[in-house]
Image 1 (spheres, rainbow, N blue to C red):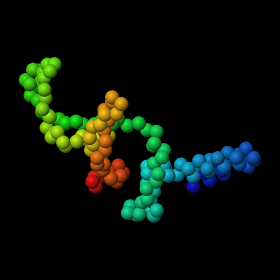
Image 2 (image 1 turned 180 degrees about the vertical axis):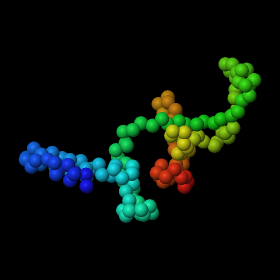
Image 3 (image 1 turned 60 degrees about the horizontal axis):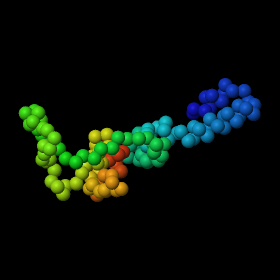
Length: 139
């Protein structure tokens, strides 16, 4: 479909044949991206028969990751009273763990660890990969 449209307008010579071969190779590599990101329908209109495509082209994309320790509500009056040394009690229990968020969505839970004088998080539970594809949690 794609490359044939261009081939009919090219005169046949070695340079154009080489270019056509490169275009065809590119089209074969890029075809997974042309349908839907990460999915390809094996038969038209049959959503249940979609198979997952490798998402290796996204491996170099950076995402903002947050670790949520806990939260609480403060009145404006209490907020204005805060000073150095003030203590805020958070809603989370001391053993409840931490939320691991990507783009504001919880994708895992974990516990804090110390690694070479830096904080880290040990993942204790993670949502299934389906969460990342269709947005539903099946934890």
